[in-house]
Image (cartoon, rainbow, N blue to C red; front, side, top):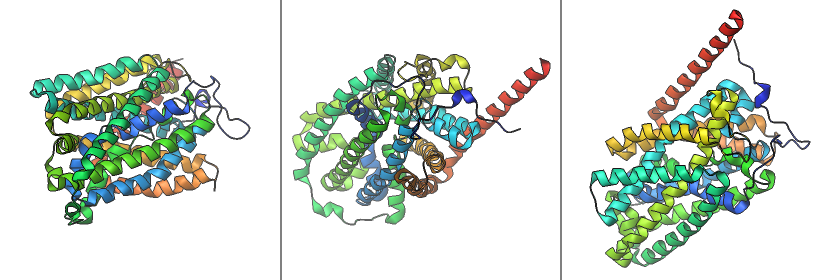
Length: 442
């Protein structure tokens, strides 16, 4: 028996085809929105990915970053076009529901809400390692710092998306300023000889580096869930997306390039590449700068993602994909504290696994496979929802090609989003069976 889209989950359309929320919109502006976008996408990748990518591809990692920056243009444009037309707490799940029905919405909700949080302890552990490299400490110290880094942003998000955006505006500005200082100080120590051989591991190495860097460029789908929090989604979402895309692309390309040309072969073996850059430029006394960068980065990432998680959790409760108790706060401008509580529990469960292992690369690849799956279904929804032959529709077509490439790069790791999809389908089938049984009894 097929499911039908519940009328309670549909957002009415305005006369120009742009979705209009019955609850109005929030009070988020371009500056705050850009700050959240930058936090979601720039994120903790700057802490370790330059080294991991250099190990995979050598100087070819620069090519990998440039390629993903180009791929991000249509992806970012596609999700911006969807979010401005359908600004709802469900984000990518709302897009999938409108395009393909509730089963697809439940699958993508599960991918994002129950799969993506595996990135939280990874991000926290990346940051904690930087802090410990500066201040000293053992494995227990690292774990305690990682836990603390996850707890503080949960408290910030409990005050609402607008408050988190205000905090993030300050943090993003500070982050960019400190990064510019580090890169400018390290650049004079560059050696062009470090660019040869360009592809020591061939093009497969570049492909692996791209797979790792999906972690860095994922995030456009995350902020789609806060589209309704903008004062004017139709105007402000494209502006915030464009600004964030430029900032993030320049930042990652600069960081990867400087890491390769300054550290050379040492970049591939570095556990804390930014710290190594600072020490090359200023000596050991610059470690505190890196600790500041790390703290700013992880706080910003959690501010952005927890805002999206909490709103999606509320939307899932509203739409029947979670118990209705979680549905409070799905309205634009409301604070989804119950959704936040559940996302914090999910993060805690993943933290037990990741922090006890300590090996980040396998978990990063799991996270990026889930991100690729979310992108794939999200851009497929755009093909259905956006007006044919519009600029957004053409961006969606191009994004589908790129998303297919990202899925191929994910390879066997797609077993993880597949498993979550099976769980989502089983939950939906069980719910439908329970409803039929209640009707038969009645």
